[in-house]
Image (cartoon, rainbow, N blue to C red; front, top):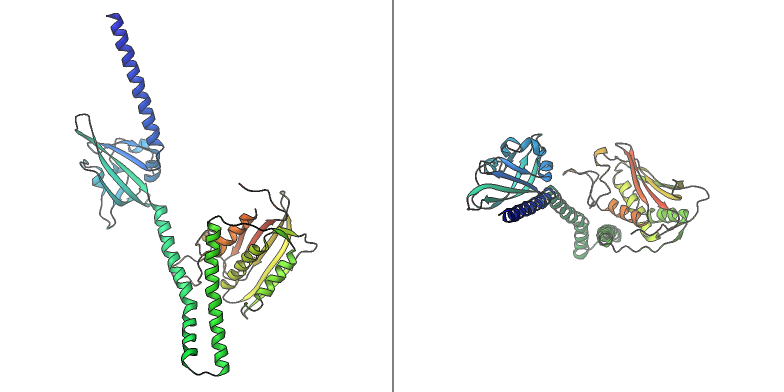
Length: 376
């Protein structure tokens, strides 16, 4: 009998250890979930509330355990109907829905909810479990796609309209040499804008796919800026003037001339676009020592409208616009500075911006003078 009791005790102890280990693993899985998990008993009182739920709802677990979800937040449907009671009433069948969580601080978080019943060994309903997935980032990406498609359509349609209009006039009317030359010039300018849009899309797709291969060579900063001035001599509006300044005794920099030219063109184009009243645009080259070796600093500054401080940190992101409003004054795909940022990073450099609303903006590309060590 003593041996039997000892054996039963050992079995019970082993079963308890296994149950404890299983519980620990389950708690680890639930705690490490990226989605918010909320479990309730048959009266709707919260029994489990993981770390993601704390972040989503904005309250610690100790403040909500034993209370209903209605005391922690409000859940509404797309039409504004209060759906919080569904998280308190017993869940008989599984369901899912797109809802909004309104936190106690007034913040609204869109979520995708999946709900299912919890049953005991005899099949009795003992509660429910709710998994809430934060879909804010998905909504942002979807909005970015919508805005991008609208911008592409606008940027293609705007120059295409005069191309078709002037071409139709040239094809159907007898015009004098002066008018013919003027209309052909308008067609050429609009076609150049179309080519710029398509080139920008192709370049961005190439860089985004990670297919950027640099062909670096020693380049003189003065040659770089002289070529830039030549490219823009006929493209710059009469209201703008381009000046350049190169520091003395500048050593050559090892870089990909073609891509740096693209980056400088994007910066000049932005400076012109965001200086609708005209003014000076200055591009400069200098050497800066920052402890990691000498660096080439290429800066473009304008006297334009400037950038709002709230948007200054995001202007280098893909599809970002300095003016993000629906009634923005300036066109563009929001890819120019994103292209510049990727080109600078590929060279192992840094990109920065300083701006003052109403007075102008300065964008600086800081590039290594020598070939940097390969980045993983």
